[in-house]
Image (cartoon, rainbow, N blue to C red):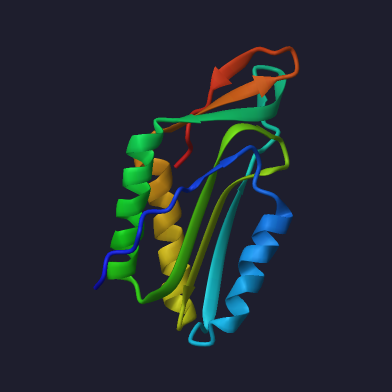
Length: 148
């Protein structure tokens, strides 16, 4: 299989609903696709030690993250029968309620799409050097701990 070109997955700030809708709409001409699966990661307004999280400021070691995202993509194309895949992750401040991760996979059949999307999201959380500072209203913060 031919290796796919590397894509920049990072977006400054939140991923807008319009961006997501446009990404979906562009696939209507790809008639070999029979199924899509989408994961949208949204910033939660968690309460930590009595304070509400109002946003997360995402930072990354971008060069390493880009390489790992590429490896995750390539492995998914080999493991699953995918037609198309898109991954976008926010950098910078994303407010509670806004989207910070968008994973969009397409295949001929739903089973591959479901399995690939879940696998990709789990690998992103486990492998990529992306960190989040959970920001509070009083301008204090804590470093986010990823949940499994």
